[in-house]
Length: 463
Image (cartoon, rainbow, N blue to C red; front, side, top):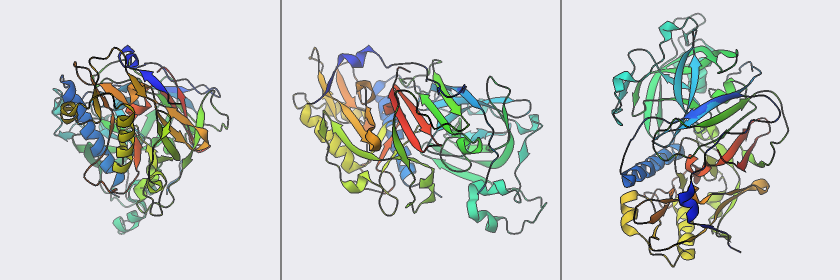
């Protein structure tokens, strides 16, 4: 029997709250905060911006450009995390001696932690939302007694360049003065470049610190005013450098405006095989077949099926599973706003919604203006039944999305649109993950990355 939500849920609220801490240990908390960026008063412009940005981000994750051990420090922490107007979430971290606080975008789809750095930091094309690029808060290495630029002979230089560092630094021998070559990293929303440095990372609320933490000192960026805290799976990421065994968050609903109301990210180190109460887990999958090493950074999940109103959507098996070259499959990404689906998957899901909502007329003008589809006209209805969207993962985990996570009221005339996007440029499939689960669809869920036990957990929760 099909399950449905009433339209009234849409207008009631986008749930807000605080992430539950892990029962096994006290925790440090990071506050997740809103990022100042695009401030558009017109709702259509906001939606079109986020739709386009989500597709651009997906293109980067699907076609990205191209070993070090750390001594783990035992600790638990909670970090505030806040939603941002352009669809991301930021976290405040402190670096240096004495500590300097910086706000960074929390990103599970990348790994390097980098900061707007030095008084000469330049951000090109960053004059949006009345932002003055010359007044972006920066980290100043000269003010930190523990800051060090990483040299070519330092093994940590290989974090960015991997085995290529041997050829790049081939003329460098022990105690040479050559610095690790500059990096350049592209994101869906921009790019950044700078030098690798090491410094002390301080945890909020506790007298705990991580010495020798590797971060990027970025001196030039394009359309990327805020730094990024990479929470991916590669050696340079924050979880790997800090020896985390688990991190979790519960994202407050963002309405694409800047708000000081946020939630908490919980980070934990120390062995613990227990399960968090009322959380359903699905195994994390290592994409060992990936021809592109960048795919090893992503958190893959085993999607079994998608249902709309209780009906299984017919999706080609080659897109649901990871293929022999590492393409296909599903990843979760906090840096994407709207969930992305490969064109074949998107068409099947959209067609099932249109079939089950056949009594409502498509709002074609709204689709054009907002960049979203399908959209339906519901203005004259007192109540509307919407099919429930559910992602089914291996291990029996079901992600039953609240209606506000996948349909949004987009006009005063009562049109609603599905907040999932696709790339129509390559309808036959263009490599990389087929489905990218964005943060908009993660709202009102407690999400746990259990790195020690290689599993990812979900639980509906008022954030």
